[in-house]
Image (cartoon, rainbow, N blue to C red; front, side):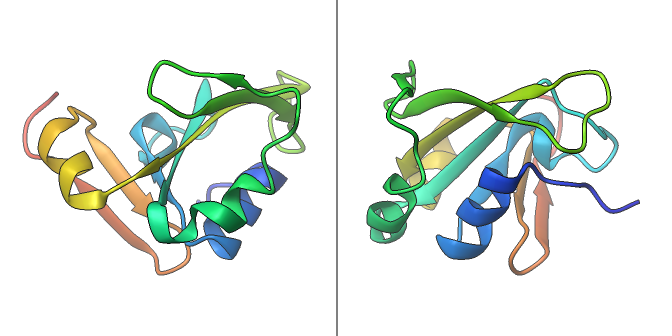
Length: 114
């Protein structure tokens, strides 16, 4: 089954070559509780244009906001966390179990549970 992304997440992933991390990247979870989107520093300028003015700082040095959900039949909105990152540092120091790059289809699972 192909996972349906919220519109802003689609724009971030295909317009700014962003990665989805955590439960949103897990192919067994159809409707994650939130979408965690990591954008490389080189693409941050274009991604930042998609972050709404109402967004609040999150604890990871990025932004969090709610956005309409066209796919989730149980909720009218979904939460999106987006932040700039360096992939090597991110993978080395973050205990995230899944990462997914929708633009290329690359998906990785960390060995063992975080």
